Amino acid sequence: MFFFFDYTMVLLIPALIFALYAQSKVKSTYLKYSQVVSSSRLTAAEAVAEILRYSPASDVRVERIPGHLTDHYDPRKKVLRLSESVYDSPSIAALGVAAHEAGHAIQHAQRYSFLVLRNAFYPIASLGSNLAFPLFFIGLIFNRSSARVLMDVGILLFSAAVFFTVITLPVEFDASRRALAILKERGFLNARELEGARKVLGAAAMTYVAATAMAAIQLLRMILIRQSRD
Image (cartoon, rainbow, N blue to C red; front, side):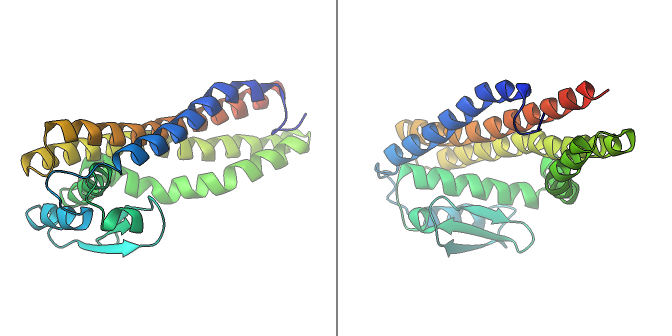
């Protein structure tokens, strides 16, 4: 019995279907609202610069980067990077995405508790994500009691990676909440446009939920396979 091809694979089917649906939903929702220009006519870069200027994150720089939906906030360099498809766009979708990243910058400036926890936990989660499966698989193929210790270590390391995905959820939800509130307060989007931005950010949040579900089920598989070796 191999780890990647065994009876527990059936557990992945619902999570995989959900993940595919989430990816499809975010693409279709973004495409729809990327074609709707906001009434403010502000580009995402202009809007996010204005948001940051009057926020606790006023020292954050805004940069353009290549790619599609590669937008992110870099807390180490205090740089908010907007993708080419977002930077110069005045669409509802672009403003929603940009404001969401500004929400992360403000979280960082205010030391939002879940973001602080996630950033502190990242090195452990990264290590767990990289080493968990190799160690588990080595312990799996060598049918000895000493080798099973490696399976236990792999489970422990992957648990750290799963925990990281869990604490990512409130960080993402809060950034979207902040984004919608700011877009409304500054008048960058009207009530009808805000609903479109809410749908874009809601679809994006669904991908994080799907990733967490997939990780949790992978951890469950590891535990079940480990128990079958006792």
